[in-house]
Image (tube, rainbow, N blue to C red; front, side):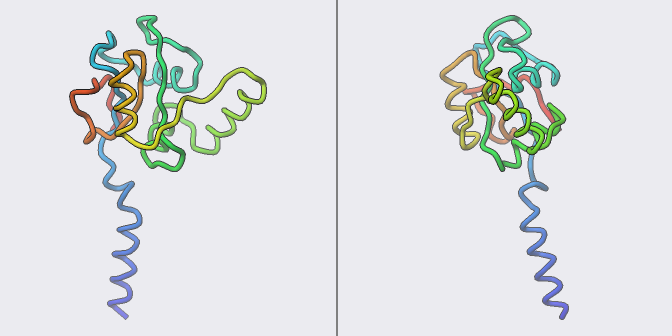
Amino acid sequence: MINKINSLAITALLIASPTLVLADLVVVVHPDNSVSSITDADISRIFLKKTDSFPDKNKATPIDQKEGNPLRDAFYSKVTKKDAAQLNSYWSRLIFTGKGTPPKVVRNDKKVKSLISKNADHIGYIDSASVDDTVKVVFTLK
């Protein structure tokens, strides 16, 4: 009986562990981008496509991660204050009315970094553990 309880507890921890061990989430841009820091309000406006530029007026192209990714859920929850259902509803309304399209979606941190490293106007979010010299951190969410 105790072994079954221990097994269940360990299984529950393993299932929950991706969200428990999620490191800091960072917002990144190309190293040559003139933006050195950005506010969460500016990031929200860029990712909800309420603006298409950085605070310095240069073009901003958001890169999103795939739906269901815990990083994506944390990013939108903390930055835009929207959960997955609210976000889907938001984009459905904009697409239906012809007033907007969601950001380009990629699979993972590696793809976000790959796109950003080739485009000075791109902005995305990744796990802080994925940061290297191909991107520059402009905001950290804890």
